[in-house]
Image (cartoon, rainbow, N blue to C red; front, side, top):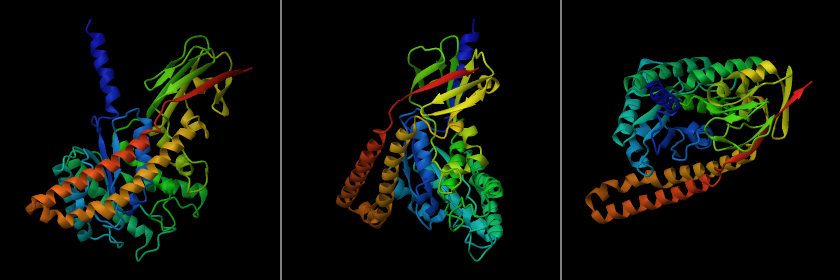
Length: 416
């Protein structure tokens, strides 16, 4: 008699496990240096959190600052984060902390000291969950500094190990940005040639292809399991869909869905590093984070044509019985327009965040000491912070105008 209640509790735990690091009303600060200030991997993370999770209670703010090291952020942390009050953070430092030289113990010691200041500072301001990221990597074919790309990657690998140690000590998830990027780099170079540059023209400010790898590492660290949707079409009976997708009506061989959880959508070019799609064959983003799975049962033929939006593809019965990931198989999807609109709004919001932090918020430190002694200055500073937070809220509200259910149809035709 107690089996069903226990099963219900188990299933609830499983469903929550994928998002366990993000509390209700999560406020996520994406923190880092100029690579973060590029506002590309941060845009991918924010788009994923808003569009792919089905949650409406998540807010994101990027705090990238060009040229910064971990110590620089530790110095501005309390002041700058006060305009957003995050309870979740991602950190990505190390590229500049390595000082563009071969690794030496003093490099690691300085990085560790400053990362400890960052972690302790985040705890102090109320951040309960943080994905502590390693630095990424450099592309030896494009990296032109006083140190070779191979030697600097060795340096960054040492810093990766320090970041991992600190994450374990603080019982926080570790985002292995370095290995995620370097694994895909070697595979993509072997397939597309040395000219392919996912880490950017200078070898260390990643192009969109490399930025997707960074987002992948952080999203995995945040705990997402990638189960965007599971759709079953029964060629002889009713169709079913997982949470986030509502079946509209009954029609044999096809299903019309209203989806509040979107699959992640990629750029068009499969070969250019300027397109995030180009890196997909060399990493596990779709398998790990972007599974929009179609299963077909009671198929009477060995093959079938699946039409989703404007595109059609053929699959075998065995493939469809096991499940096909439509997000990986279809270059065009019914979500493309909605995704593009949301991404554009997020791009605008994150650009505002850079201006807000670098031109206004950081400089509040100059009057902080005076505000501590003068109640009128303190009152004025409080009002200014509220005004800036209110303006950011307007930007965030504009983003949410683009988050709407998408209605789409999947059709299956038996091939005889």
